[in-house]
Length: 67
Image (spheres, rainbow, N blue to C red):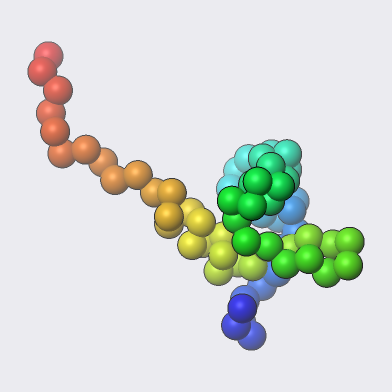
């Protein structure tokens, strides 16, 4: 984590992904995304979220389907 990384709450993370808090909590529970635990609070670094999104990006196919 760099000094510039912002720590996001689960709610803020869900908002940025445009998904539910439940989905974010599942990512954390399954350890599919790195997180920071501060006592009882869970935070996700902004850089980690960007890396997660980049790692799951699917490139468009260049193959054309027959009609």
